[in-house]
Image 1 (cartoon, rainbow, N blue to C red):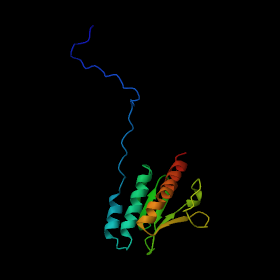
Image 2: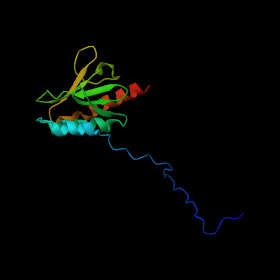
Image 3: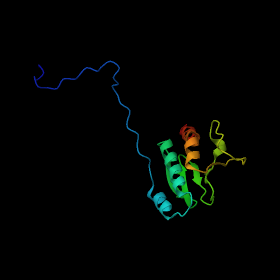
Image 4: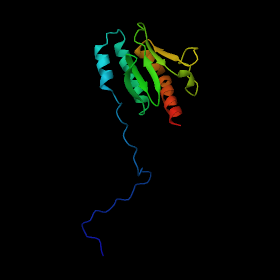
Length: 146
């Protein structure tokens, strides 16, 4: 049977044109409980903490957040890191099992058996060391995916 005259024709792909497109990145998964925690927070570095939160959630789509130990905690197949809101002159993240994150992460500090911390004193410092934070988050997620 012949095709109908007004059926749509496929356009040939142009040379170098991609046939399949990558899905658009998903927006970070914000938890309303964490939003409420930040709404109640009175801290000199609250804006910087919110920036750190955005970087962590945008680092890997597998990361989720919740309130655990009375503070925002980021997780993927186990807890990755939690804010330490008692710190007043810097934003401090406790990486619960930071010693187990594969690879070299010079911004992860500490010498305990498992825990490590990462600190930021300003938006400029966060911008400078953002790749280190992102790398640590992705390394954890990749490690926990296997």
